[in-house]
Image (tube, rainbow over all chains, first blue to last red; front, side, top):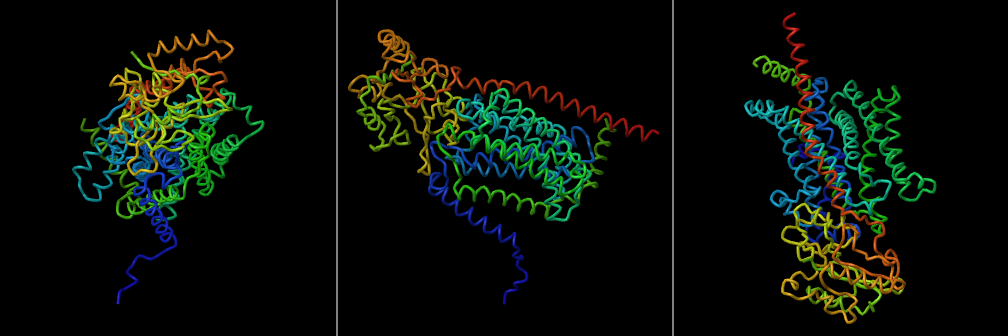
Length: 390
Length: 244
């Protein structure tokens, strides 16, 4: 008789995961067997939908916490943030991996995804995005490799990569800066199509700022979820300053958005708000005003629940911004509304779920969290040693 | 010399001969599409009783060609903007970027391509004119050198000022196109986008992309400098701690 108690326990969340993955699997078969038309709500009027607007635009941006924290620790030498660098880089790496997979779904001929490697059009923002994302994913993999080498006790490779940390982090920050802003630049080419509430020559800079703000928010959220799931200490002494930095970035971003509206003469539209105006107010209120207001109150930002709520709304606002640019803002010119099909949704949700699952597996098998001060100690010694030997 | 097509909507009788000829020349199914699709690269629309055919504008500095990451779309010296299907990976940025929303996609196929009018580049290479202009029974659409067609269009505007809106659509829109239109009614009324800039659209991204070398150089110096300063600060602090 089979010993049923040896099987993994079927908890509620595991059941949810199975349902999500099963639905996603069905949609995958449909997408690759019958084509994009059968599996999505995309059309000639609306060629880009959820997989670009959410999976690519948001997925890339949400992983910005990785480069921000790596810079904070390895360039600005704020060593006390070291314990949260590894999970941030893991989140970033998984985020980019998921974006790559999402692209395999969205591209009409995904087996040609390697074409930009040999077929060049440097005039194209998409070309630049493709290259920067490929290079940055490589950098992320290299930045994360010491964790794997540590587990496999491969000292030689681990030391080699550690010695390359500074140039890798600098390369990572530069690549990230370039392609986070390039995602905004994608929409510079449609001045006659993108609704004036969102079109501005500042799109690249706004996408970059919102990525930094949301990246910091994601670090808080990811720490909170890890605390809930794996019982790792929620380092409020580290997260609170990140929350404050997030609010400052959001404030600058919010001011610039207002300035853009003034310059576009779009403020007048709010007297009689239509669909686009309401979507803007929702995005701005929930994603800019609310997080800043919450973080501004000391009692709120010092509480776990307050900081996490503020971060959640910052991240939601970030997602809404990108969906408003890619969907809402393009609907009027397209002459069509876009609502994703349930198959598109199931793939996007499935990829997010896989990301969570991969994160949990990585935490289980790799020294992501238990290192903390220990690692800071080892790495600090290495820094002194290499400095002294010079 | 660059070829072009002049469409005089005041002469079009809506017979659809150009549509049928295009489908035959491109091996497309003869169906009744009311707008451009993957199977209909040239369509005759009716706006308030006025017939206007819509197809690729073959821009002088095409937005689609500039945004394609793998260079699958290209403006040829002969005039047509052509599509190299072998390069295309189906990202569909060209569809988003085109200010006239021309490129269509084969959504139903597992191996889809982008579809749009090619100004019969293959026929032109053999010295023939495009199938559509050859088929037009009333010469509403004519084929020729772009500057000659512009001169002809200006002549018609001059000789019949009240019979035309005094504007050649495509002369300057997005830096000029190889398909030119004349009309007796406002072009927006015929479904042409109203707010299309006169700058070629690739300029809008060039302004951002051209800053990249500066961002990379300045960024490297800045980050390297910060690292050096903070690293130095830590070394000094450690030395003092050891020495003191």
